[in-house]
Image 1: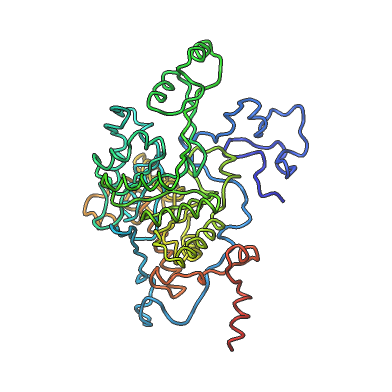
Image 2: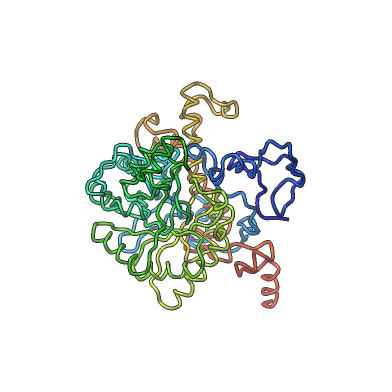
Length: 518
């Protein structure tokens, strides 16, 4: 078998002519005929060239890997227990899932509280407004993604630095309108191009941003962010802002070819960050002096040597949070092969991070909080992620699934207004308050008409409620009534590969150990 996807993909709207008859090592149809219209990846490439590298309609879609990784969280089951309790008294009334405490904190010296061990990673596309608002309703952290100012038609620069960004201000406000007292925060992420433009300094001083995130990679985890630009005037505008534009639109010959309809399309290319220990620590210190109260780092599934360096720098610089994003998840417009074939998948990455943290802990390092992301969608995955990384991995990032909830909620709100409720949901009623079950809870919290709350935000709040309650139920089932009691023995590998990679014992191995104690 092949773990890789064949050369037909929903990401590029391609398909094989003979999907049941595939040469697995190449991904091609086993018989390639001269009369084929070219519906596969090779055909698209023959017609569109390098444009075929990228997924289709990224302004409307989220993108994640289609590769069938050999190990994921389905290879584990949650351990079961029937005796005792941890975190509450052994009392049948007290030992009930609503009493499971899943609140947690984030931050070293300026801690913020979270109602669940969840963060919503950096996104600044699709239904971002409800993504941020729903996170605020739920009392968790949301991160505004990189490169926002490049999308801001009303951006004002002064001396090459951001003086005003109405779009960024709107994104911050989308969260703060619904932010609950003492819970959650909105975090602003910056890539290296944002740093050149002074985005974080502007946001800290003018928008009262207290939490910032330095992106150690670029675009989705590591690859350069790319955007194709058809208009030479737009290409010149971005070049004047300091972005890399290829080919050079200010070159007279290239401009002349453009007017003739010749030459390649322009590309806006994100700069690859080239941090070292000194420059990264200096940048962190500069942001603190500017007024940032919490410093976060966003890291991808890099080589273990790089991961060690990141965590050591974070420890010495007293960074508040590192989010490690495993291969497989995604939301942006990254090249398809990068999404499928680059980086370390989440389970492997989490074990590597756990081992590094454990070793540094032995050596007395002051460790940051850590979040793991990359394909998490449901409460069982959240539990398994917390268990596999315990006690060093404290939070789980849910990105694509959370945005999906925000988009579904918004779409349902539109259908309710149009009186076109889908038949699957008519059983619940016809109004927003009838169909969205958790709307009543939000109404109680905020004391205002539910019509004032965006349906997309209600959808995301409801989704996080489902994850939170599901996590509480799984913890109660395992007799764990507080997050701090979750440990690595709370999951059981179902396959030899899962046991080998994670170092966890299978049920059979645990049995042999217990038999020796009889």
